[in-house]
Length: 109
View 1 (cartoon, rainbow, N blue to C red):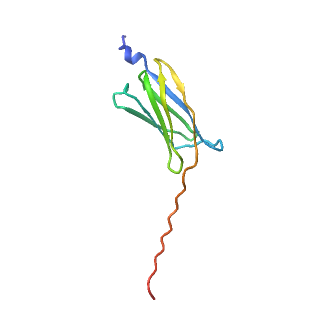
View 2 (cartoon, rainbow, N blue to C red):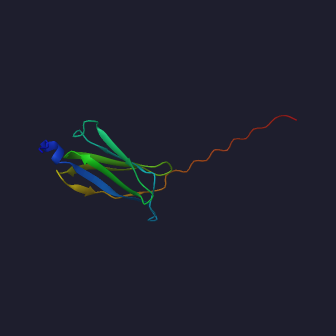
View 3 (spheres, rainbow, N blue to C red):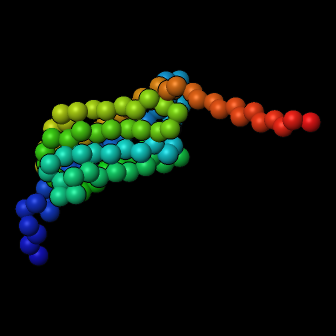
Protein backbone atom coordinates (compact mmCIF):
# COMPACT_ATOMS: atom_id res chain seq x y z
CA UNK A 1 0.00 0.00 0.00
CA UNK A 2 1.47 3.32 -1.08
CA UNK A 3 0.43 6.65 0.40
CA UNK A 4 1.08 10.04 -1.15
CA UNK A 5 4.01 11.78 0.54
CA UNK A 6 1.72 14.55 1.88
CA UNK A 7 -0.41 11.96 3.69
CA UNK A 8 2.62 10.37 5.31
CA UNK A 9 4.04 13.72 6.49
CA UNK A 10 1.17 14.74 8.77
CA UNK A 11 1.94 16.63 11.98
CA UNK A 12 0.00 17.79 15.05
CA UNK A 13 -0.22 20.55 17.64
CA UNK A 14 -1.23 19.67 21.17
CA UNK A 15 -1.18 21.22 24.62
CA UNK A 16 -3.07 22.34 27.69
CA UNK A 17 -4.79 25.66 28.40
CA UNK A 18 -4.81 27.10 31.93
CA UNK A 19 -5.93 30.29 33.61
CA UNK A 20 -3.54 32.61 35.47
CA UNK A 21 -4.05 30.68 38.74
CA UNK A 22 -3.01 27.39 37.10
CA UNK A 23 -6.49 25.89 36.78
CA UNK A 24 -7.36 24.10 33.56
CA UNK A 25 -9.83 25.71 31.16
CA UNK A 26 -12.33 23.46 29.36
CA UNK A 27 -14.24 24.84 26.36
CA UNK A 28 -11.45 27.01 24.93
CA UNK A 29 -11.54 27.36 21.14
CA UNK A 30 -8.12 26.66 19.66
CA UNK A 31 -7.52 27.58 16.00
CA UNK A 32 -4.47 26.88 13.86
CA UNK A 33 -4.23 28.97 10.70
CA UNK A 34 -1.79 28.43 7.85
CA UNK A 35 -1.49 28.74 4.08
CA UNK A 36 -0.39 25.09 4.17
CA UNK A 37 -3.95 24.01 5.02
CA UNK A 38 -6.46 23.65 2.20
CA UNK A 39 -9.26 24.94 4.45
CA UNK A 40 -7.06 27.72 5.89
CA UNK A 41 -7.80 26.98 9.55
CA UNK A 42 -8.30 23.93 11.73
CA UNK A 43 -9.97 24.18 15.15
CA UNK A 44 -10.49 22.18 18.32
CA UNK A 45 -12.10 22.67 21.74
CA UNK A 46 -10.30 21.90 24.99
CA UNK A 47 -11.70 18.99 26.99
CA UNK A 48 -12.48 18.77 30.73
CA UNK A 49 -8.74 18.58 31.51
CA UNK A 50 -7.95 21.65 29.37
CA UNK A 51 -6.27 19.48 26.70
CA UNK A 52 -6.56 19.98 22.95
CA UNK A 53 -5.12 18.24 19.90
CA UNK A 54 -5.05 19.47 16.30
CA UNK A 55 -4.14 16.57 14.01
CA UNK A 56 -3.43 15.92 10.34
CA UNK A 57 -1.63 19.23 9.82
CA UNK A 58 0.67 19.78 6.87
CA UNK A 59 4.19 21.11 7.42
CA UNK A 60 4.35 24.91 7.30
CA UNK A 61 4.12 28.10 9.34
CA UNK A 62 1.15 28.36 11.70
CA UNK A 63 -0.58 30.93 13.87
CA UNK A 64 -2.33 29.34 16.85
CA UNK A 65 -4.99 31.34 18.70
CA UNK A 66 -6.89 30.57 21.91
CA UNK A 67 -10.19 32.20 22.91
CA UNK A 68 -12.83 31.81 25.62
CA UNK A 69 -15.56 34.32 26.56
CA UNK A 70 -14.59 36.28 29.68
CA UNK A 71 -10.86 35.80 29.04
CA UNK A 72 -8.29 37.70 26.99
CA UNK A 73 -7.38 35.82 23.84
CA UNK A 74 -3.86 34.49 23.31
CA UNK A 75 -2.04 34.11 19.99
CA UNK A 76 1.21 32.37 19.05
CA UNK A 77 2.52 33.37 15.62
CA UNK A 78 5.30 32.03 13.40
CA UNK A 79 5.19 28.42 14.61
CA UNK A 80 7.25 26.32 12.18
CA UNK A 81 5.73 22.84 12.01
CA UNK A 82 7.97 20.18 10.49
CA UNK A 83 6.80 16.94 8.84
CA UNK A 84 5.82 14.10 11.17
CA UNK A 85 6.25 16.26 14.28
CA UNK A 86 3.97 17.02 17.24
CA UNK A 87 4.44 20.52 18.66
CA UNK A 88 3.36 21.18 22.25
CA UNK A 89 1.92 24.67 22.69
CA UNK A 90 0.55 25.41 26.15
CA UNK A 91 -1.37 28.62 26.81
CA UNK A 92 -2.34 30.73 29.78
CA UNK A 93 -5.45 32.89 29.46
CA UNK A 94 -5.97 35.84 31.78
CA UNK A 95 -9.38 37.00 32.92
CA UNK A 96 -10.62 39.72 30.60
CA UNK A 97 -12.96 42.59 31.19
CA UNK A 98 -15.97 41.49 33.16
CA UNK A 99 -19.20 42.96 31.90
CA UNK A 100 -22.44 43.21 33.77
CA UNK A 101 -25.71 44.69 32.64
CA UNK A 102 -28.41 45.99 34.94
CA UNK A 103 -31.75 46.83 33.39
CA UNK A 104 -34.12 48.93 35.46
CA UNK A 105 -37.70 49.24 34.38
CA UNK A 106 -40.40 51.18 36.08
CA UNK A 107 -43.93 52.26 35.56
CA UNK A 108 -45.89 55.22 36.90
CA UNK A 109 -48.29 54.30 39.71
